Length: 376
Image 1 (tube, rainbow, N blue to C red):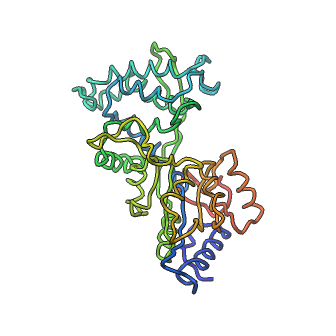
Image 2: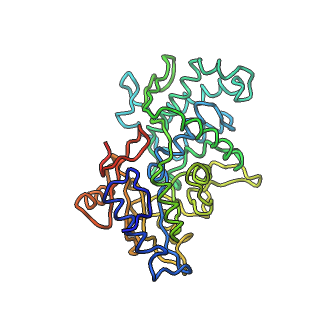
Image 3: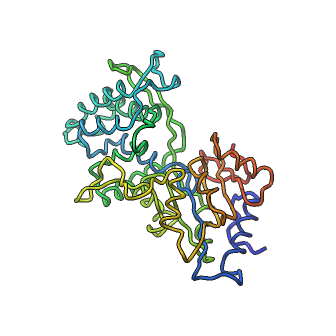
């Protein structure tokens, strides 16, 4: 069989079935009709790349104090759409006491007020290198990350998602692109790891906390090659991500992927008349989460000149709907991660030898695929 993609570290089943899909649906098929081009759809974070672009951007934003919001704006954002009950037991403080959003929000607000107008990155005159050594900075970073990991979204809210991207309030699109360029370059150079952030022993409402956070970001050569190969053979490739569209586009249109931005879809935030981000979703577009990904495919990709996606790739339950919604899908690619949920039904079929579902392993700390179906 003709090999359309580079072998790299694809496992044998994945390599065989992807090449067969391209042969069956690409330009080499005598029945191929360029007026009715087939298409494929993939998730972005932890599918197309190693890591998560929003989590990388969040890490850089928080640790570099790169906000354009004042303390009152931050306080409203960190409490928005959050369940007021105590966090899960695994997110108690170091004294074993319960923590909730009210306690952690007060601590973040108080410490950000001290940093705001003091750090040279927040309108003050104290150099950032000095600020980084203070307890105030360490408290702020640790508790912002803790809030991200621990908070549970209010199921009764209209938009139980996107708190992280609301932190970019008052950024314009061009500023987001510039920020992401710096953030991604920085995080890609970082050694992939889980880092423990512990707040200092100071008086606070929530008390002293400690939290683990994955730091790492990188291209996957095999996925970039797959996308280029599909496009070369006449199969359109789209990204549908649950992350903020401007952040995903900032990565996907550059680096080794070089997507056309129109083929990268994701969550959209509301903007004011000057183009500045507001802490709200743009409700003119579907939320690209779970079933919203399928809705996005139907509304913005599928049309009278094509049909459902012939291939869909993802890594978690957030991708389950778009993997199973379309009868035209011939091949499902799952990047193996330790995740519970419906996605494991598809993984089980892949491991049983399904010709329509493939499982591909990776090593997130080495930032690469490994030639197996289960990740280590």
